[in-house]
Image (cartoon, rainbow, N blue to C red; front, top):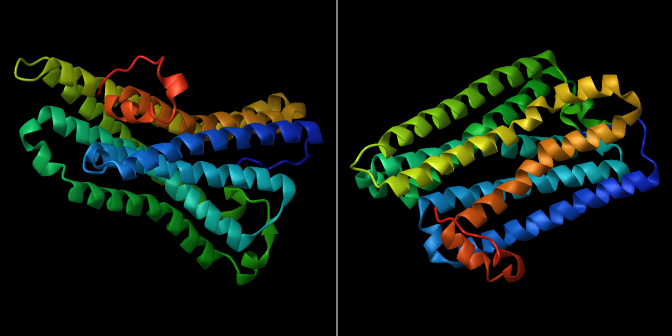
Length: 306
């Protein structure tokens, strides 16, 4: 959504950048689509809460990356989008963006329960409760996006929705109230996610040192939560992208389009690409099914069961 070009690239540069984005998006959606197909065609996955949470994140990232790349590429073909279309795409992107860290927090909680309270794990983390938790997560992620829409409807004239704009969030949600909302929500959401990860990490670390817990299982959960923390850090790159752009554009104004492309790719595309690969390769069950679809490359990867 950072494709706010004041000067269009030369055709060759624009073609290369968009080709890279589309190619990466196709590869990502192929891998993720294969994982989703494996999930829905094998009962072993859609009856386990941790896989349900994981595949929810995969589908979430597929939607977000597809929309983001489509808008980015579309801005070169049709620079101006009708406001209603841009508004819908922006809301969906905001929801999926907010949903990622919340989903990672949910996955960390599930692993925490599995290690710290294994006798009650099957009772607490049922399939039904997992889907209820996902519904709540999606609902909570949707609140900021729809609050932005409500603020816009209240503050902007109806003629605002008949305009054509460059489709990025600062052109859709333009009032000072939106800035306050963004700051407040980011502080609350990210604080909640990090507190959840820190608490579950140290609880699992403490339990791992007790004699009553399987040290191997505890170590796996410990590593998994660390991986969640890394993914949250990657997903937070998009929050610092505006500051990076401001600094870099001021220092290298002649490289404007290149800077915007690189920060967009690193902050929005790369984190989504890594999640399915990392989880798919780390998990022994999922890896065994993936080998049937990617036999040439995956057969040489050393698997660490989770």
